Length: 170
Length: 78
Image (tube, rainbow over all chains, first blue to last red; front, side, top):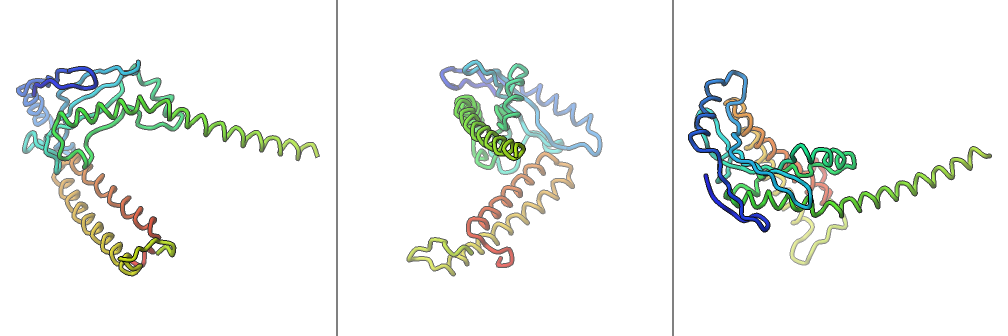
């Protein structure tokens, strides 16, 4: 599949690896399949890196197949493709720090939810891109919330410490 | 069921309870359908598709739990 679409203020080219190459990969998986491995899976057909407010993220298209029927939509979906948001190596240190603060799944999403079932590929790409932008845009607010929570905890710890040292003095 | 559930003039508390029970039973029926399908997919070795079905069943479980929690429905009532 080859098409152009607007994401944010940029027009991007979505050029998947050629159909023949996808079929070759599928054929290779058929030949190499061994029991009890899964007879279905995904082939990555496109990937692109984006940077927003200095934070890098990637969008990738995955195409579903089963070894008996070839490429087909998964479950009740209309498209045999879905989109994932992932973070590249350079964003990993930030993601690890956020995880330590309890912020999970930052720049880690997919369009495999039932609400995405009736979406076309461009619609899924737009949704995935928006999820990534929302993560980045919403980060200052989430960090402010964590700071407020920590301040409350520090206050509580200080109060406890104060009352505890009073007990020791007696 | 919660005593302070707001009941308007058109639905009595008993009617509301009956409808909630109906919804919970329908969710359970749907769950059984997806459970069976998930098993079939696993037997065919389609593990990725089975995982999606499992996700759907878990989602229904959460929905059931939230409905029960919101209306404080007793497990034995349904």
